[in-house]
Amino acid sequence: MPLDPVLAPVGLNSLGLPKPVAETRVVVAMSGGVDSSVVAAMLAEEGYDVVGVTLQLYDHGAALARKGACCAGRDIHDARRVAEAMGFPHYVLDYETVFRQSVIDEFADSYLAGATPVPCIRCNERVKFRDLLGVAKDLDADCMATGHYIRRFAGPHGPELHRAADPARDQSYFLFSTTTEQLSYLRFPLGGLGSKAETRALAARYGLPVADKPDSQDICFVPSGNYAAVIEKLRPGAAEPGDIVDHEGRVLGRHDGVLRYTVGQRRGLGIGGLEEPLFVVRLDADRRQVVVGPRELLLSRTVALREVNWLGDGAFEGEQEVLVRVRSTRQPVPALLRPVPGGAEVTLLSPEEGVAPGQACVFYAPEGSRVLGGGWIARAA
Image (cartoon, rainbow, N blue to C red; front, side, top):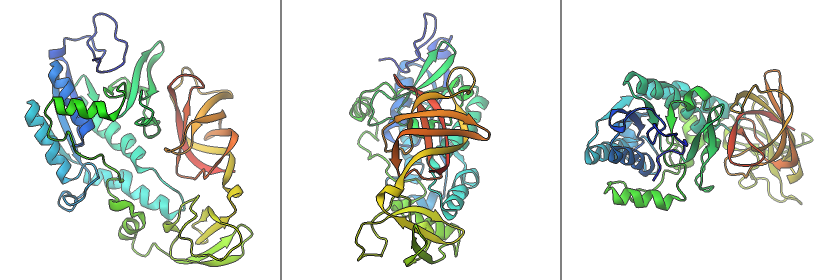
């Protein structure tokens, strides 16, 4: 089976490189899960010079008891076992300080500011595809491979990013900030698989000890999805109480910390007895207010973006029709995209609910599977 859909011409190996397989070194980013383990095994079986690297991202000892989170102590052990089984070297690098400074601190501060951050994107952007990619180059690797479900094609104007063949596993939302330069060096062998069942079948065929390992569910440093508990630990005293107000400013109740709420939330507001259901429509961290209102106030048509990463052909200029995804769980919807000073503006052709600052807005071509980039949501109206 093809390892990477790069449409390699004659004379290039299956990773699109002009070298014999045995002379091509590939660093595989190994989280200890089944996906990256299968990537490493596939490449090793084909004869590539594979080097596995695992990043220790947070306290190793404390992580041992955490299930369903990547890069914990158990996962480091599992990655090492896979490397031993397949006969390639494996290294563990301590990135706790980098991860804290680059990902965790911003996560906590963003929540305290009333945003809804996506730390997995920052981890890919600032740790895996920046620092780990640099390590791979230091190891004289010809490319770096990961277990992400996304496809990379060699297009007429350079490497292109495309959604995974399996829509249910597509991870393009979390990889929008990958640059063209990084794409030149990255490979995603699993992007063309039809389902996760195929990945597990390959793991079983290779006899990998992680073949039946459950998928990770939580953000790796947020066990059981309890964001508030983690933020309170990182920022003692951060859970300042305040008012729950309606969209006209009337006080409806009290809360014990803005960080415990998210835009779009309906349950757990503690303001029952009202005639109509109310939703969190905005978080005002400066005033320590949770603003609630009817469902129609969740609808947004215009979205302002910052830190835009453009992956389309040519310069990012002029208004154009695209599809956009404003949450990882949403389907792409039609929109108009135009650059503005400091970022971009998106006009949704049909209003979307719960567009929240701190989330990403990812652009796709109107037809086909190509990812055109994306940006961070600054505000929505």
